Amino acid sequence: MSQRGFAAPAMIGKIVVSIAALVCAGAGFVNAASETGNLSLSMSRTLDATINSEVRSRALDQNFRLAASAEAENGNASSDMVLAEAQSLRALRPLDPVPVRVWAVGGIAQTDPERASNILVSASTMNKRDAVANMWLVHNFARGERVDAMITFFDQGLRTSRQLRSTAIAPFVGLLALREGRDRIGQLIRAHPDWEEDFWTEFARNQIALQNAGSFFEETGIDFSEQPSERKAEIYRNLRRLGYFESMFALAAKDRPLGEQSERIPPESLASVTSPVGWRLQSSGLVSSFYDDTREALIVDAQPGALGAFAELVTPKKFGSQLEVALERPAPEGGRLRVSATCAGDRSNMLAQLELRPGETLASTPLAEDSDCAFLLLSASIAVERGSQGGVELAISRIGLR
Image (cartoon, rainbow, N blue to C red; front, side, top):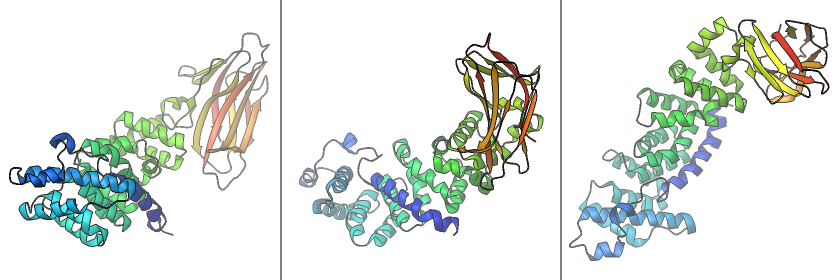
C-alpha cells in the first residue's frame, strides 16, 4: 500500500481531533472580551442607534466564541440571536469577515458544510487573518483529506498570532508524515515565513517530524547542514533516544560538517566521542571513561565494586562481521571487560558477546546473522571485584566490527 494510502486516514483523523478544539472560542485565540468588555448581544441591538457597526461586529465575534464554547461543552448550536445579528451585519458590513464567518460556520455549516467552506474560502481573499475561519477550514479540509488546502489555511492561521501558533504548530508539523505535506511545507519553509522558528522548534522534538526527517530534507532540498548546531544536536539526540536510527544516519549523511569530521574520524572509531553518531561515553560514581588523544585510546578507570556500561555505539549492521575488542596492555586481575552487540532498540536480541580474561589484549567473536536487524548497539561494560586493590584501569585501543 502506498504511504499516502496507509498514513493519510490515521494522520488526518488525528488532525481533525486536534483542530476541532482550535475552532472553538478561546482555544488559542485572543478573547474578544478583553478588548471590548462584556458587551451582551441584546445590549448591542438595543443601542443600535448609538453603537457603530464596528463595535457590533466585535460583540458578535465575542458572542459567537461564547456560543461555540457552549456547543463544545453541551452540544448546543449557535443561538438564533447570534445568527440573526450576523445576517444583519452582513448587510451593513459586506467586507467584514466576522459576520460572514458566523453566518457560515454557525448556520450554513450545520446542514451544508461544503457551501460554508466555499463561502469562507471566498471571504479569505479579502481577509486572510481570521483565525477562527482559518482553523475551521483546516478542520473541514482535514475531513476531506485535502492536504494542500489544509496547509494553505494552516499557513494563514499560523501567521495570525503567536498564541494560535503555540496550539496549532504541533498538528501542522504532523503533516510531515505525508508526502504531500512534506512537499508543501517545504515550499513554505524556503520562503521563510514568520512562523519558521516555531516550526523548527517543534520539528526538533516532534516524533512524526523526526521519524520523517530524512525524507523531509531529501524531498524538499532544504540543506540540513545549515541548521544551527544547537538544533542539529537536539535533533540527533532525540532521534537516538526515540530509536529512529534510519533517519539519524540519513541526516548524518547530509550534514557536511559532520561528514568532514567523519572523514577524519569515522563514527566507529573510539575517537568519535564528539560526533552525534559516534561513541557515547558514560560515567558513574565508580566508573569514569574518557578518550585520550595522545594515547589514541579509551581510558576506563573503575573502582572496586564497579559494575556497568561505560561506552555505547549505534552502527549499521555489516553481514559477516566479527565483534572485536583490543587493549593497549593486558587486562589486569580483578576486572572483567565485556562487550556485546545487540539489535538497536531490542537489547534482548543478543547477536554477539565477548569477555576479556586477565592477561589478554585481544578478543573477537562472530556476529550472529539476523535479517531483521538493520542497526546494532555495541555496548562495553566493566565489573571490578570488591576486594580489588586500587581498582582497575584499562586502555582500550579498539572496539568494533571487522
